[in-house]
Image (cartoon, rainbow, N blue to C red; front, side):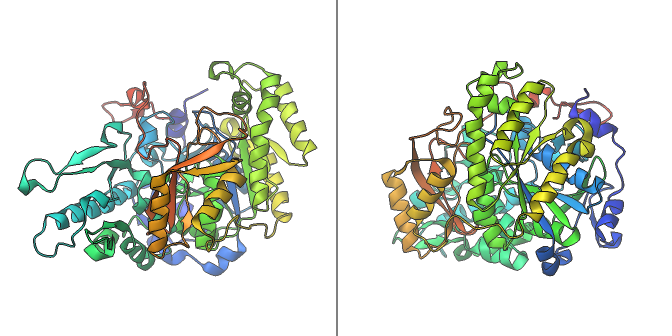
Length: 556
């Protein structure tokens, strides 16, 4: 079988104007980025059509380190829906360079269910990530500049500054640093650090904003720190929001590309789901719903992370109604959660597979908490045996859960037709299923504990003294009605990455809480999760190359 990049490079890509024609966008309205990429003006969002179109969410079971093919499934499903006569668009997040050069690879799908041009999408794309990075770091520069000033100094206490800098790369050595060294003209020495751009509050804020005006207001609400007299300081106090928004004036517009089969694809925003909300922008989702009858979208990692945040944050903020949910599962991941070693996942192991059903069942329960009976998409691998597939299908049938074998990696849209038909049946069974699992008016601890107990299966939540103090301070700022966006490992339902399957009898430990007042939520940080990842022992970057003609190899 060919590598993903070879399949993408051999594809006959259509001019982006032809894809716009499918959606009814006049070509002269597009903002072109070469022949095959374009930005869509926000005026094409139609709130009345948004209410009429159907939204399908694709989530997953707890993944193995390599991921289980959620994006591939989303793309294949959208292609399949178009094959059977529906007008469907896939709406996805933008890839971060961290995973592209790290372990997980790109985020453009795979096999014959990819978005193209694959190299462009995975490497810089239309510059949105860079714009977010610059807007974020502009605020950081303004903070340090204000501390240095003699006139106009707000009296910010450097010890309380919560705002780090960001870069779109895995760089563990920058997690904790000291800045401002070199003398009185070089700034005030203080402890700081870097997060990855996908974890930036500017990224999170961009993804929940409705338009430029709303974005500017939200950016102004970003919390910076406290003065020496314990007065809170926000970005608006530094007059930062105007310039930050100016840097994002193009980044706020969704990006239009296509799949290998010419299905329209809108790609916009890229927060991680383990450390941020893990969904594309509200703007992009509404754009897709405005221009097509069905939108397929995905939320990062598994149901207790991306899907929970999709419903409790994005759907509430954007007043979005989901019509159906798909859970991606793989035989290899189920065996992994049943105790099989990573090195043995290609071997038939019925015992491990049966034990792994516990993990699948928990994710089914999670989606039922929101009112959905999900459809299971078994993302097929060559190593899957007939006996293993039958065992999974029978398990789902006993629970009256639909399950389809998805072969869209190998066959494109035609490999996901059975899945598409099941999803359409699920839509007719679920006209208005969605209900959030908590109310924004609840106290923070009740919201946090609801998520931990219902979504993760925890028995208890334990707060460090630092976290308790931070929650109290946020309450005193009058921000108690914010949503909750827990940062937690994606490798386990618990906050311990080594606990596979369906852990029971565990306690979630909240070590600290960050305030993302611009985005509209708090970020309780559970366990040892980092907001700046590191590179693996053998990073993907070592395999990426380019020849003298500009042809890129090694991306996946």
